[in-house]
Length: 209
Image 1 (tube, helix red, strand yellow):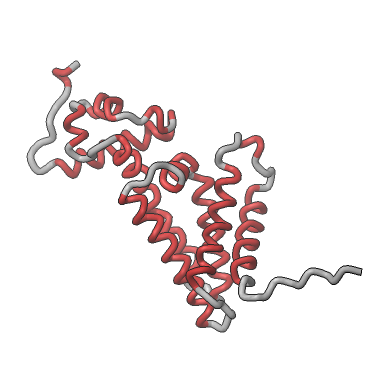
Image 2 (image 1 turned 90 degrees about the vertical axis):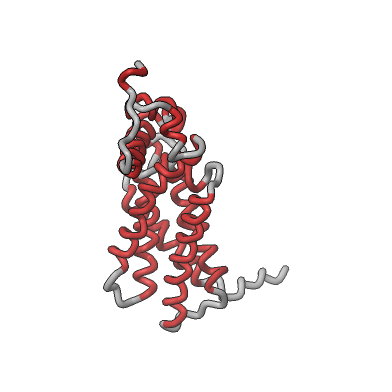
């Protein structure tokens, strides 16, 4: 009913935006991206769709803002697991474990941000993730780990952890490994070791008999 819909009070736009994101996040968790529409959010918030468009220019921006709100906690988690770890390689491994765990814990948000249509916000997020991992690789290099290119190594590392997440999240949970913690730990170790060993020359093929 239109009579139940209200405008945000003057100076309360920020509060309305947060409320819209709360509602959008709940819709996304319960029904996926298809359930998250401008009209559904407006109806739940008791406002008109134009009121939502004042804060989000399109559904895509609303979806990404909702996802990135969750993603903002990722860097806090990454810092929490690596802070105080003296060995940079171990810190890098723990960072990869936290990243994969985050992706598996928030599959809808992960897929929409990393694999969906890009927005400026999602591009900034992906760039921030890459720069974070590159800094961790640079710390390994400073500590004496032979790294030819921090950028290339970080790119390979990101491919490893992203692949570990993307392998599982499209599947039903009963198809996931029984020991998910072991899978995450091994995937992180594989990504770190593989990326840091790329400076080595590949072995020569055996000579024909």
